[in-house]
Image (cartoon, rainbow, N blue to C red):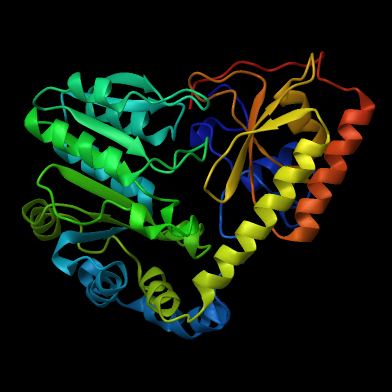
Amino acid sequence: MSGRLDDETGGHGGDLARASERWNLNSGELIDFSSNINPLGPPPGLLDHLREALPGIVAYPTPQARELREELGNFLAVPADRLLLGNGASELIHLIILWRRPKRVFVPAPSFSEYERAASLAGSAVERYSLMPGEEADLAAVGRKLKSGDLLVFCNPNNPTGILYPRRELMSLVDAAAERGAEIMIDESFIPLTGKPGESLREPERYNLWVITSLTKVWSLPGLRLGCAAGPRKYIEELTSRGDPWRVNCLAQAAGLYCLGSSGYLEESLALIDKERAYLAGGFLETGSFHVFEGSANYLFIMGLQPGFEVAGYRDYLAERGILIRRADNFHNLDHRYFRVAVRRRPENRRLLQETAGYLKSGKFSLNNIDRGGEKA
Protein backbone atom coordinates (compact mmCIF):
# COMPACT_ATOMS: atom_id res chain seq x y z
CA MET A 1 0.00 0.00 0.00
CA SER A 2 1.14 3.52 -0.76
CA GLY A 3 -0.24 5.00 2.46
CA ARG A 4 -2.79 7.23 0.80
CA LEU A 5 -5.91 7.97 2.81
CA ASP A 6 -8.13 5.91 0.51
CA ASP A 7 -5.92 2.88 -0.30
CA GLU A 8 -8.04 0.27 1.46
CA THR A 9 -11.32 1.38 -0.15
CA GLY A 10 -10.12 2.09 -3.67
CA GLY A 11 -10.85 5.78 -3.30
CA HIS A 12 -14.23 5.78 -1.57
CA GLY A 13 -15.22 8.19 1.16
CA GLY A 14 -16.52 7.34 4.61
CA ASP A 15 -13.34 5.99 6.24
CA LEU A 16 -13.75 7.98 9.46
CA ALA A 17 -11.18 5.96 11.39
CA ARG A 18 -8.39 6.73 8.91
CA ALA A 19 -9.46 10.37 8.61
CA SER A 20 -9.56 10.92 12.37
CA GLU A 21 -6.09 9.42 12.67
CA ARG A 22 -4.65 11.55 9.88
CA TRP A 23 -6.07 14.84 11.14
CA ASN A 24 -5.88 14.03 14.86
CA LEU A 25 -9.63 14.35 15.45
CA ASN A 26 -12.16 12.13 17.15
CA SER A 27 -14.43 10.43 14.62
CA GLY A 28 -17.40 11.95 16.43
CA GLU A 29 -16.04 15.42 15.60
CA LEU A 30 -16.06 14.79 11.86
CA ILE A 31 -18.87 15.91 9.55
CA ASP A 32 -18.83 13.41 6.70
CA PHE A 33 -19.79 14.87 3.33
CA SER A 34 -17.70 12.17 1.61
CA SER A 35 -20.33 9.39 1.79
CA ASN A 36 -23.78 9.77 0.29
CA ILE A 37 -26.14 8.53 2.99
CA ASN A 38 -29.71 9.67 3.71
CA PRO A 39 -29.23 12.88 5.76
CA LEU A 40 -32.33 12.09 7.82
CA GLY A 41 -30.50 9.18 9.45
CA PRO A 42 -32.09 5.78 10.20
CA PRO A 43 -35.87 5.62 10.74
CA PRO A 44 -36.90 6.67 14.26
CA GLY A 45 -36.82 3.82 16.74
CA LEU A 46 -34.50 1.60 14.70
CA LEU A 47 -31.65 1.64 17.23
CA ASP A 48 -33.96 0.54 20.03
CA HIS A 49 -35.36 -2.18 17.78
CA LEU A 50 -31.84 -3.46 17.07
CA ARG A 51 -31.02 -3.55 20.77
CA GLU A 52 -33.99 -5.83 21.26
CA ALA A 53 -32.82 -7.99 18.35
CA LEU A 54 -29.26 -8.41 19.70
CA PRO A 55 -29.94 -11.74 21.50
CA GLY A 56 -30.57 -13.22 18.04
CA ILE A 57 -26.86 -13.14 17.21
CA VAL A 58 -26.41 -16.50 19.02
CA ALA A 59 -28.33 -18.25 16.21
CA TYR A 60 -27.77 -18.40 12.47
CA PRO A 61 -29.72 -15.79 10.51
CA THR A 62 -32.71 -16.86 8.44
CA PRO A 63 -31.30 -18.38 5.21
CA GLN A 64 -31.59 -16.09 2.18
CA ALA A 65 -33.38 -13.57 4.42
CA ARG A 66 -36.69 -15.18 3.43
CA GLU A 67 -39.08 -12.90 5.29
CA LEU A 68 -37.23 -9.74 4.33
CA ARG A 69 -37.01 -10.94 0.75
CA GLU A 70 -40.80 -11.39 0.57
CA GLU A 71 -41.52 -8.00 2.15
CA LEU A 72 -38.96 -6.27 -0.03
CA GLY A 73 -40.51 -7.86 -3.11
CA ASN A 74 -43.85 -6.32 -2.18
CA PHE A 75 -42.20 -2.95 -1.54
CA LEU A 76 -40.31 -2.93 -4.85
CA ALA A 77 -43.14 -4.55 -6.84
CA VAL A 78 -40.76 -7.34 -7.93
CA PRO A 79 -41.51 -11.05 -7.36
CA ALA A 80 -39.43 -12.38 -4.48
CA ASP A 81 -38.06 -15.21 -6.64
CA ARG A 82 -36.35 -12.57 -8.76
CA LEU A 83 -34.54 -10.99 -5.79
CA LEU A 84 -31.22 -11.82 -4.17
CA LEU A 85 -30.30 -10.03 -0.96
CA GLY A 86 -26.75 -9.30 0.06
CA ASN A 87 -24.32 -7.54 2.35
CA GLY A 88 -24.68 -4.23 0.52
CA ALA A 89 -24.85 -3.36 -3.18
CA SER A 90 -21.07 -3.57 -3.57
CA GLU A 91 -20.97 -7.21 -2.47
CA LEU A 92 -23.66 -8.11 -5.01
CA ILE A 93 -21.82 -6.30 -7.81
CA HIS A 94 -18.71 -8.37 -7.04
CA LEU A 95 -20.70 -11.58 -6.64
CA ILE A 96 -22.48 -11.34 -9.98
CA ILE A 97 -19.41 -10.32 -11.99
CA LEU A 98 -17.29 -13.04 -10.38
CA TRP A 99 -20.01 -15.62 -11.06
CA ARG A 100 -20.78 -14.61 -14.65
CA ARG A 101 -17.09 -14.02 -15.51
CA PRO A 102 -17.76 -12.01 -18.67
CA LYS A 103 -15.15 -11.81 -21.40
CA ARG A 104 -15.27 -8.02 -21.34
CA VAL A 105 -16.83 -5.58 -18.91
CA PHE A 106 -17.75 -2.15 -20.22
CA VAL A 107 -17.63 0.39 -17.37
CA PRO A 108 -18.59 4.07 -17.39
CA ALA A 109 -16.01 6.76 -16.69
CA PRO A 110 -16.21 8.53 -14.40
CA SER A 111 -18.18 6.20 -12.15
CA PHE A 112 -18.11 3.91 -9.10
CA SER A 113 -14.78 2.10 -8.89
CA GLU A 114 -16.14 -1.29 -7.78
CA TYR A 115 -17.24 -2.25 -11.29
CA GLU A 116 -13.68 -2.19 -12.56
CA ARG A 117 -12.26 -3.75 -9.39
CA ALA A 118 -14.73 -6.64 -9.64
CA ALA A 119 -14.02 -7.11 -13.36
CA SER A 120 -10.28 -7.23 -12.74
CA LEU A 121 -10.75 -9.81 -9.98
CA ALA A 122 -12.85 -11.92 -12.35
CA GLY A 123 -10.14 -11.81 -15.01
CA SER A 124 -12.32 -9.88 -17.45
CA ALA A 125 -10.99 -7.33 -19.90
CA VAL A 126 -12.14 -3.82 -19.05
CA GLU A 127 -13.25 -1.18 -21.55
CA ARG A 128 -14.36 2.28 -20.47
CA TYR A 129 -16.95 4.52 -22.09
CA SER A 130 -17.49 8.17 -21.29
CA LEU A 131 -20.24 9.52 -19.05
CA MET A 132 -18.68 12.95 -18.62
CA PRO A 133 -21.07 15.66 -17.43
CA GLY A 134 -21.84 18.27 -20.05
CA GLU A 135 -21.41 15.73 -22.84
CA GLU A 136 -24.23 13.79 -24.47
CA ALA A 137 -23.83 10.09 -23.77
CA ASP A 138 -23.88 8.07 -27.00
CA LEU A 139 -25.41 4.91 -25.55
CA ALA A 140 -26.30 3.56 -28.99
CA ALA A 141 -22.62 3.59 -29.96
CA VAL A 142 -21.73 1.77 -26.75
CA GLY A 143 -24.40 -0.85 -27.49
CA ARG A 144 -22.97 -1.50 -30.95
CA LYS A 145 -19.62 -2.47 -29.44
CA LEU A 146 -21.10 -5.32 -27.40
CA LYS A 147 -20.52 -8.95 -28.29
CA SER A 148 -21.64 -12.29 -26.92
CA GLY A 149 -20.21 -12.89 -23.46
CA ASP A 150 -19.82 -9.19 -22.63
CA LEU A 151 -21.28 -7.33 -19.66
CA LEU A 152 -22.09 -3.63 -19.74
CA VAL A 153 -22.36 -1.81 -16.41
CA PHE A 154 -24.34 1.39 -16.04
CA CYS A 155 -24.81 3.53 -12.92
CA ASN A 156 -28.11 5.43 -12.74
CA PRO A 157 -27.99 8.06 -11.39
CA ASN A 158 -24.29 8.05 -12.00
CA ASN A 159 -21.79 8.37 -9.18
CA PRO A 160 -20.15 10.90 -8.87
CA THR A 161 -21.93 13.07 -11.45
CA GLY A 162 -25.49 12.52 -10.16
CA ILE A 163 -26.96 12.47 -13.66
CA LEU A 164 -30.16 10.39 -13.98
CA TYR A 165 -30.65 8.84 -17.43
CA PRO A 166 -34.17 8.16 -18.80
CA ARG A 167 -35.51 4.64 -18.51
CA ARG A 168 -36.46 4.56 -22.19
CA GLU A 169 -32.84 5.14 -23.27
CA LEU A 170 -31.55 2.40 -21.00
CA MET A 171 -34.22 -0.07 -22.13
CA SER A 172 -33.03 0.49 -25.71
CA LEU A 173 -29.53 -0.37 -24.52
CA VAL A 174 -30.82 -3.53 -22.83
CA ASP A 175 -32.47 -4.57 -26.11
CA ALA A 176 -29.31 -3.86 -28.09
CA ALA A 177 -27.30 -5.98 -25.66
CA ALA A 178 -29.78 -8.85 -25.92
CA GLU A 179 -29.48 -8.87 -29.72
CA ARG A 180 -25.72 -9.32 -29.33
CA GLY A 181 -25.81 -11.94 -26.59
CA ALA A 182 -24.51 -9.53 -23.92
CA GLU A 183 -25.70 -8.83 -20.39
CA ILE A 184 -26.30 -5.51 -18.61
CA MET A 185 -26.00 -4.58 -14.96
CA ILE A 186 -27.74 -1.35 -13.90
CA ASP A 187 -26.64 0.01 -10.53
CA GLU A 188 -29.64 1.94 -9.16
CA SER A 189 -28.22 2.49 -5.70
CA PHE A 190 -29.34 6.12 -5.57
CA ILE A 191 -32.68 5.93 -7.40
CA PRO A 192 -34.64 5.57 -4.11
CA LEU A 193 -33.28 8.99 -3.08
CA THR A 194 -34.18 10.75 -6.35
CA GLY A 195 -37.96 10.60 -5.86
CA LYS A 196 -38.25 9.13 -9.37
CA PRO A 197 -38.95 5.41 -8.91
CA GLY A 198 -40.49 5.25 -12.40
CA GLU A 199 -37.00 5.44 -13.92
CA SER A 200 -36.06 2.07 -12.40
CA LEU A 201 -35.50 -0.93 -14.68
CA ARG A 202 -36.39 -3.57 -12.07
CA GLU A 203 -39.38 -4.56 -14.18
CA PRO A 204 -40.05 -6.21 -16.57
CA GLU A 205 -37.90 -9.32 -16.32
CA ARG A 206 -35.24 -9.65 -19.02
CA TYR A 207 -32.97 -12.66 -19.29
CA ASN A 208 -29.88 -10.45 -19.73
CA LEU A 209 -30.61 -7.73 -17.15
CA TRP A 210 -29.41 -7.30 -13.55
CA VAL A 211 -30.55 -4.36 -11.44
CA ILE A 212 -28.73 -3.52 -8.19
CA THR A 213 -30.36 -1.50 -5.39
CA SER A 214 -28.60 -0.25 -2.27
CA LEU A 215 -30.69 -0.24 0.91
CA THR A 216 -27.70 1.02 2.88
CA LYS A 217 -28.03 4.53 1.47
CA VAL A 218 -31.78 5.08 1.58
CA TRP A 219 -32.11 3.82 5.17
CA SER A 220 -28.76 5.19 6.38
CA LEU A 221 -27.27 1.79 7.31
CA PRO A 222 -23.68 1.93 5.99
CA GLY A 223 -22.32 0.07 9.01
CA LEU A 224 -24.84 -2.79 8.75
CA ARG A 225 -24.80 -3.21 4.95
CA LEU A 226 -27.88 -4.27 2.98
CA GLY A 227 -28.65 -4.43 -0.73
CA CYS A 228 -30.55 -6.46 -3.30
CA ALA A 229 -30.25 -7.55 -6.89
CA ALA A 230 -33.18 -8.15 -9.25
CA GLY A 231 -32.37 -10.56 -12.04
CA PRO A 232 -33.64 -13.38 -14.25
CA ARG A 233 -35.44 -16.07 -12.25
CA LYS A 234 -33.23 -18.93 -13.41
CA TYR A 235 -30.05 -17.12 -12.38
CA ILE A 236 -31.47 -15.93 -9.07
CA GLU A 237 -32.60 -19.49 -8.33
CA GLU A 238 -29.12 -20.82 -9.07
CA LEU A 239 -27.45 -18.20 -6.87
CA THR A 240 -29.99 -18.89 -4.11
CA SER A 241 -29.64 -22.68 -4.20
CA ARG A 242 -25.86 -22.80 -4.60
CA GLY A 243 -24.66 -19.58 -2.96
CA ASP A 244 -24.04 -18.55 0.62
CA PRO A 245 -27.36 -18.94 2.50
CA TRP A 246 -26.34 -16.51 5.29
CA ARG A 247 -25.24 -13.54 3.22
CA VAL A 248 -27.43 -11.17 5.28
CA ASN A 249 -26.85 -11.18 9.04
CA CYS A 250 -29.69 -11.23 11.55
CA LEU A 251 -29.37 -7.58 12.57
CA ALA A 252 -29.42 -6.39 8.96
CA GLN A 253 -32.53 -8.51 8.37
CA ALA A 254 -34.19 -7.04 11.46
CA ALA A 255 -33.27 -3.54 10.34
CA GLY A 256 -34.63 -4.10 6.84
CA LEU A 257 -37.98 -5.36 8.08
CA TYR A 258 -38.26 -2.46 10.50
CA CYS A 259 -37.40 0.12 7.83
CA LEU A 260 -39.95 -1.27 5.40
CA GLY A 261 -42.63 -0.57 8.00
CA SER A 262 -41.54 3.03 8.68
CA SER A 263 -44.49 5.06 7.44
CA GLY A 264 -43.70 8.49 5.98
CA TYR A 265 -39.93 8.10 6.35
CA LEU A 266 -39.11 8.09 2.63
CA GLU A 267 -41.36 11.08 1.91
CA GLU A 268 -39.72 13.07 4.72
CA SER A 269 -36.27 12.09 3.46
CA LEU A 270 -36.99 13.23 -0.10
CA ALA A 271 -38.40 16.55 1.08
CA LEU A 272 -35.27 17.18 3.16
CA ILE A 273 -32.94 16.26 0.30
CA ASP A 274 -34.74 18.51 -2.20
CA LYS A 275 -34.63 21.49 0.16
CA GLU A 276 -31.03 21.07 1.26
CA ARG A 277 -29.73 20.23 -2.21
CA ALA A 278 -31.04 23.60 -3.44
CA TYR A 279 -29.56 25.40 -0.42
CA LEU A 280 -26.14 23.78 -0.76
CA ALA A 281 -25.96 24.23 -4.54
CA GLY A 282 -27.00 27.87 -4.24
CA GLY A 283 -24.33 28.51 -1.62
CA PHE A 284 -21.54 27.14 -3.81
CA LEU A 285 -22.78 29.03 -6.87
CA GLU A 286 -22.99 32.33 -5.00
CA THR A 287 -19.24 32.27 -4.40
CA GLY A 288 -18.59 32.50 -8.13
CA SER A 289 -15.74 30.06 -7.61
CA PHE A 290 -17.51 26.79 -8.39
CA HIS A 291 -19.62 25.16 -11.07
CA VAL A 292 -22.33 22.85 -9.73
CA PHE A 293 -23.46 20.24 -12.25
CA GLU A 294 -27.14 19.39 -12.65
CA GLY A 295 -28.02 16.12 -10.95
CA SER A 296 -30.81 14.13 -9.32
CA ALA A 297 -29.09 12.32 -6.46
CA ASN A 298 -28.50 13.19 -2.80
CA TYR A 299 -25.07 14.66 -3.56
CA LEU A 300 -23.55 17.47 -5.62
CA PHE A 301 -20.84 17.13 -8.23
CA ILE A 302 -18.76 20.30 -8.32
CA MET A 303 -15.84 21.77 -10.26
CA GLY A 304 -13.53 24.47 -8.89
CA LEU A 305 -13.17 27.47 -11.22
CA GLN A 306 -10.45 29.53 -9.53
CA PRO A 307 -7.02 29.48 -11.21
CA GLY A 308 -4.75 27.32 -9.10
CA PHE A 309 -7.60 25.48 -7.38
CA GLU A 310 -6.47 22.05 -6.22
CA VAL A 311 -9.02 19.73 -4.64
CA ALA A 312 -6.29 18.11 -2.53
CA GLY A 313 -5.62 21.39 -0.78
CA TYR A 314 -9.31 22.21 -0.39
CA ARG A 315 -9.97 18.74 1.06
CA ASP A 316 -7.12 19.13 3.55
CA TYR A 317 -8.22 22.63 4.59
CA LEU A 318 -11.71 21.34 5.37
CA ALA A 319 -10.50 18.14 7.04
CA GLU A 320 -8.34 20.11 9.45
CA ARG A 321 -11.60 21.78 10.50
CA GLY A 322 -13.48 18.50 10.88
CA ILE A 323 -15.22 18.33 7.49
CA LEU A 324 -14.70 15.51 4.98
CA ILE A 325 -15.48 15.80 1.27
CA ARG A 326 -14.88 13.33 -1.55
CA ARG A 327 -12.02 14.21 -3.84
CA ALA A 328 -13.00 13.19 -7.36
CA ASP A 329 -9.59 13.48 -9.01
CA ASN A 330 -9.08 9.71 -8.75
CA PHE A 331 -12.12 8.93 -10.89
CA HIS A 332 -11.19 8.18 -14.49
CA ASN A 333 -11.53 11.22 -16.79
CA LEU A 334 -11.52 13.72 -13.89
CA ASP A 335 -8.74 15.98 -12.67
CA HIS A 336 -7.75 18.17 -9.72
CA ARG A 337 -10.72 20.53 -10.13
CA TYR A 338 -13.50 18.07 -9.23
CA PHE A 339 -15.09 16.95 -5.98
CA ARG A 340 -18.36 15.56 -4.60
CA VAL A 341 -20.28 16.49 -1.47
CA ALA A 342 -23.26 14.74 0.10
CA VAL A 343 -26.42 16.66 0.94
CA ARG A 344 -26.75 16.82 4.72
CA ARG A 345 -28.86 18.73 7.25
CA ARG A 346 -28.96 22.53 7.31
CA PRO A 347 -26.53 23.19 10.21
CA GLU A 348 -23.92 20.92 8.60
CA ASN A 349 -24.49 22.33 5.10
CA ARG A 350 -24.17 25.86 6.49
CA ARG A 351 -20.92 24.91 8.20
CA LEU A 352 -19.49 23.53 4.94
CA LEU A 353 -20.35 26.76 3.12
CA GLN A 354 -18.87 28.88 5.91
CA GLU A 355 -15.60 26.96 5.90
CA THR A 356 -15.50 27.10 2.11
CA ALA A 357 -15.84 30.88 2.28
CA GLY A 358 -12.91 30.92 4.69
CA TYR A 359 -10.86 28.80 2.32
CA LEU A 360 -11.56 31.13 -0.60
CA LYS A 361 -10.61 34.20 1.45
CA SER A 362 -7.37 32.56 2.53
CA GLY A 363 -6.22 32.23 -1.08
CA LYS A 364 -4.75 28.82 -0.24
CA PHE A 365 -5.27 27.14 -3.57
CA SER A 366 -2.92 24.32 -2.61
CA LEU A 367 0.06 25.30 -4.72
CA ASN A 368 2.07 23.43 -2.09
CA ASN A 369 1.68 19.79 -1.06
CA ILE A 370 -0.23 18.88 -4.21
CA ASP A 371 -1.17 15.21 -4.29
CA ARG A 372 -2.34 13.98 -7.67
CA GLY A 373 -1.03 10.45 -7.28
CA GLY A 374 -2.64 7.16 -6.42
CA GLU A 375 -4.73 4.64 -8.28
CA LYS A 376 -7.82 5.58 -10.22
CA ALA A 377 -11.21 4.85 -8.64
